[in-house]
Length: 479
Ligand SMILES: Cc1cc2nc3c(=O)[nH]c(=O)nc-3n(C[C@H](O)[C@H](O)[C@H](O)COP(=O)(O)OP(=O)(O)OC[C@H]3O[C@@H](n4cnc5c(N)ncnc54)[C@H](O)[C@@H]3O)c2cc1C
Ligand SMILES: NC(=O)c1ccc[n+]([C@@H]2O[C@H](COP(=O)([O-])OP(=O)(O)OC[C@H]3O[C@@H](n4cnc5c(N)ncnc54)[C@H](O)[C@@H]3O)[C@@H](O)[C@H]2O)c1
View 1 (tube, rainbow, N blue to C red):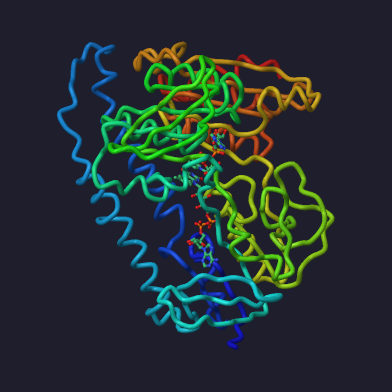
View 2 (view 1 turned 135 degrees about the vertical axis):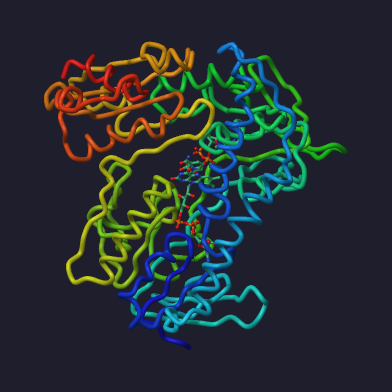
């Protein structure tokens, strides 16, 4: 049995822990899949490369309102796919793997390419991908950075049909004529935009009465309205049974107007992601998960048993499991790369330095890169009211500022929520072009406690730029 100073499971965010401070340590790095993890290979990066491509492809369709009549000639899917994967992502993944396996910087690192599971406290068995004999390894410190995987709902017949998830759909051989997307969250919204802009007829099947339901209600309502004008959106629709047919997949659904059938060439299942704690058999390592399957960690990212999770934050009041740390999707209710990166830096610091630091989950923003874009930080209006805050709410349309006129935008808005007692923002929600960039000064203000009045009038806002949307919304707040 080999013993290490440090074992890291997962080469997504976990791979970034190993800087020069760890050169003197004997390290095992375990990966069962493609080096680099979800964000690089099947997540943020290829999806956003596709979203940008989709934005360009969709432009001729929007331009006539500006007096420019343009048409889209062709979409060369295989060129798009090769540009994204063969020319860029696959090379980065291969380069990252080679660096850890062969470069002299990593003489202290042993890469295990296989599937790990706990066989005891800080003891793991790794079944190699090449089918060789499992190796059992132990360490003083173990970091779990093993992420999450697509959750597959328990629907009759689904296991027997050819369906895709976000792991496979970006590498389709050819673009289908039709695609059904099951789900109405981040992944469904982003891929509906991508594939419909590239010419696929998309049907989106949502169990609930609105898309992006976790967003502020006004944003979810507006997104649903705009989506219904672009895609075939089936709300309040449950999928009862799925079957294969000659040209694709058939869904038997129960909709508000009764039972129905939806047929398409490709089915994409986008119904959430499950943390990989079960496959690691974390209980055998003396570790605990919460009801969502997330590994329990405290504010220092240390594994704990017992205790209770604060609102989307760390578990408080648990007993620390010595020498086990976790970061990212395996332990985080956020399932976002910037959160995984932040937690990775906290774990890295806490492993390397004598004084521990805590993770900061106070103002975690997110963006949905669909059409329209959505971005958000802090409380929704409903959450702010539920907390009993005395709030001021402002809503500014893109169509009410000069750059919005230039864009002829008629659906986007920014909604800001401030606490009258403190004069601080408690939530910001934007739907419309560049929402993911426009929100950044508001994230900064919330993070550093900058009052609304100071943020609005304490600086110049470039005229006539799109951030005037934010300036005008701030000026409407009574806080
Ligand atoms: C389609 C899609 C788009 C996304 N877009 C965005 C976005 O725009 N912005 C954003 O912030 N977030 C986005 N995310 C979420 C983001 O990708 C994740 O939150 C982030 O990558 C999680 O990083 P991680 O290091 O926790 O896990 P991962 O990057 O998933 O790394 C975990 C690694 O552990 C390996 N592993 C797991 N179990 C074992 C085992 N038992 N043995 C050995 N190895 C194992 C896995 O193979 C994997 O490589 C997206 C996700 C998806 C699916
Ligand atoms: N831009 C980004 O930051 C980005 C992009 C993609 C993914 N992600 C991350 O990945 C995570 C997973 O994305 P996602 O879209 O799969 O999850 P999600 O939680 O955003 O949405 C899941 C959707 O599936 C629906 N659903 C669940 N079970 C179902 C069932 N049995 N039948 C029908 N519908 C069902 C839910 O109602 C919900 O609409 C996100 O939560 C997010 O954290 C982030």
